[in-house]
Image (tube, rainbow, N blue to C red; front, top):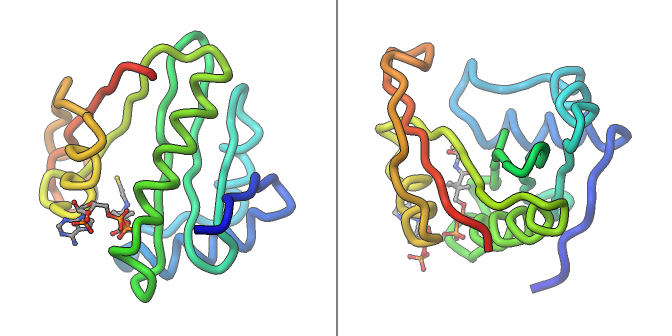
Length: 143
Ligand SMILES: CC(C)(COP(=O)(O)OP(=O)(O)OC[C@H]1O[C@@H](n2cnc3c(N)ncnc32)[C@H](O)[C@@H]1OP(=O)(O)O)[C@@H](O)C(=O)NCCC(=O)NCCS
């Protein structure tokens, strides 16, 4: 698999297009929102252009996945897992000792991916998403 590249604010429109094509209708983030998140302390993104990306933040010894998206046409080829592994390595290099993320309870694909990577449930946010579903807070120690 070719290596993943770092994406910065200049890539925010391309990341937003990938997000819109990967997420359910109404859940897409615009380029401005993505650029803002990239500008947060410790914010970073890794991507494979035209296929998928991960947006994360590592600050204060902890890291968080803010977004993970892979285009439907290229799913189940290992890119989601590769993006997560790369984000965890980058967070570790930035001094993080744990990675957190939120996932919608009905999102079986993402939950299976995270389970396979060793994430476990650390909490629940009731009715967190617009469709009324709960968010599960998942955690994994780094490395
Ligand atoms: C979740 C997502 C990023 C997975 O990307 P992907 O590139 O298909 O993931 P991978 O190919 O690396 O899958 C790794 C493992 O995750 C699990 N998995 C991934 N998709 C799955 C699915 N649809 N059903 C069940 N398990 C799945 C499997 O264990 C898979 O390993 P396998 O293919 O050897 O069985 C992708 O489906 C996506 O972009 N979904 C929409 C956005 C989203 O939900 N993002 C996460 C928000 S928290």
